[in-house]
Image 1 (spheres, protein in one colour):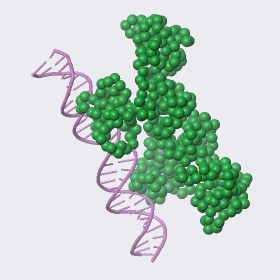
Image 2: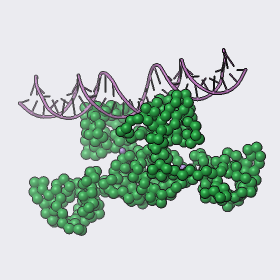
Image 3: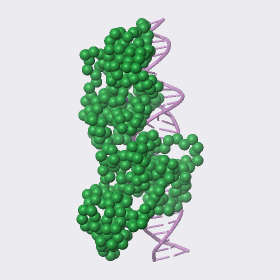
Image 4: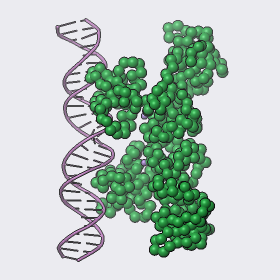
Length: 226
Length: 226
DNA sequence: AAATAGATTTAGGCAACCCTAATTCTGGTC
DNA sequence: GACCAGAATTAGGGTTGCCTAAATCTATTT
Ligand SMILES: [Mn+2]
Ligand SMILES: [Mn+2]
Ligand SMILES: [Mn+2]
Ligand SMILES: [Mn+2]
């Protein structure tokens, strides 16, 4: 622990965000996983992990993996809030589209002040989700993460509401937007081929065939879910 | 010269902006001047100046001073545009005041994309000056710099329009704003004490006595000036 | 139990930036 | 023309954060 926490660097903030993301699945984040996500060499990650552990932001069990400490998680969630508020603001007020906004937010998140983020949040009416349907942590770090069902697992015949799109790949996002597959849209699953085959859905603007990859990325609220 | 110019770092951008500012007076910027403005040790500046000269951004005559090359000036003006558009946007849309906006813009200017700046400029209606009355360079780097008269030099009896406030000190800026001394305001000089004494002005909300420092900072358009 | 693939760490470097202390230069002054 | 103060540079370090290549560890397979 280093009590008089000095401001985190851009690199450190990106590491913490990445580790937060990778730890979502319950198990600790591996060195190579982190390296892949941040596009760095694994050896570089080992070095940074050592430093962050000494600063009390991570718990590192050599050869096993890393987890965030509560201080680390707090910092990570702050970055997640910044990122998602920024995305929301840029889309709402500056004409960004959901396929171009991630990149801009990924740089700005390190440069904005708390004050600016809160002003943007206020201008947006304190939204609870960003343009991709990702939940936005509150300023105190609390976040309500709802459990959704991938469209690929919605039974044939059911009608669901799209709530969240789990990808950053611009081409996928553009494809979805072009066909009205955005958070809030209602779709009905009319067929599904077996063995990882495509799902057929009926949307506001016609029927569409979605391969397993795309259908797995679209998260839906089933009947009765909130 | 290094042809395939890679992105400039935050430090480099700040150096170029500082050198641009210091070269405004015609003579080259000195090492110590730059160091003072950036709050660095002079030795650090010597090192950076060497690197930037090698990159073709500066012309350095050892022991004499540095000047921007055209590539350096281009980069500096880009930062000035970014800074001033950001200030304008934050004041216009996010409730910033002119005494708090500089700090935020000084960090953001390094993180925003060209696209974002142009979107903000569009939302603002492509302004030609920022909240302090500082001129905003066009995207191509051209800038119209008008010549104003410091209030301290406006003859007694004349009426002028405030156009620009030349300080970043928040306390001064707050004082001016409190008393309506902002760009666009009309004031009449009703008296001036000799030997660097105060100037008395008549403003929309009453008479006011301004010491030489403050009166020197308020730049005005005299009758007939544009 | 030995071999091995893959993950991880260690070793050794490098570039960008910053600092302090010591040295050198420059433009006057006496 | 020698001297001096201040400006600038050089010398020598330190930190952060990244890389490649060479160990080393772990888990799984044979
Ligand atoms: Mn980022
Ligand atoms: Mn998002
Ligand atoms: Mn800056
Ligand atoms: Mn300004």
